[in-house]
Length: 279
Ligand SMILES: O=C(O)CCC(=O)C(=O)O
Image: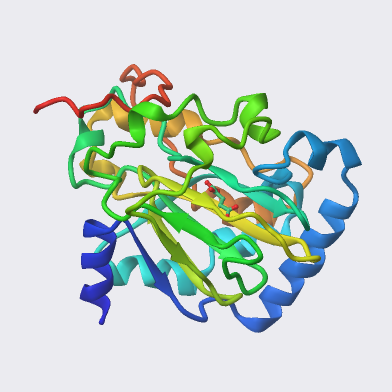
């Protein structure tokens, strides 16, 4: 069962662990994210119609419990990773009646040679706080695109430009149907783990309800990566907010993918070369 999940993560680029969030934490996250998102100015959602609003998880100390969730760390260990460090995370709201999220990958370390190997430099944890299906904007992925060249890659523009965020031109390839895509519907409380190099997008939310996801980025077994990549990952880490209670800060600090060496970090590069360089 578990090794089947590892095989799926390595081959397809993602896998799902059902029922990982304890019910009490799920309802607390639904309440807290609802309050945070309700408090944003309305232009926020207008300017980010495709992604929905994105807010750092450092907005509220409850997220320390999610970052350090033992059930999720156990899921990672069952995939064969000894340890994973946290770098950052977002609350992402997909408002009612909002358009598709554009195709993209999250990885931005494409200058590092490890980016083109089966080693996983970054994974996303996605926790959807409502059940998702095609009608309310479930995730879409292109299985295998984390390690294989895909025809879509050269057609994509830089992710997260203002035009893409507003979904100004839905005829762009970034919003297209792909012949090799699959839907990933989720039950609230499941943990979706994916390789951050995976091409992913989301369907339009045609429902009348907000569809919120929390994305956390982790970096498994960074000691196996080259020093320059460790430094790159270390640069993605930021300090937990000073105003959080000390115990909460310490809990978060213990999870961080810090780097203390002196190697020069690879530059931030969101453009995956196509075709992939031959190693
Ligand atoms: O909104 C979603 O369903 C996916 C979010 C996403 O693509 C991301 O966090 O990278």
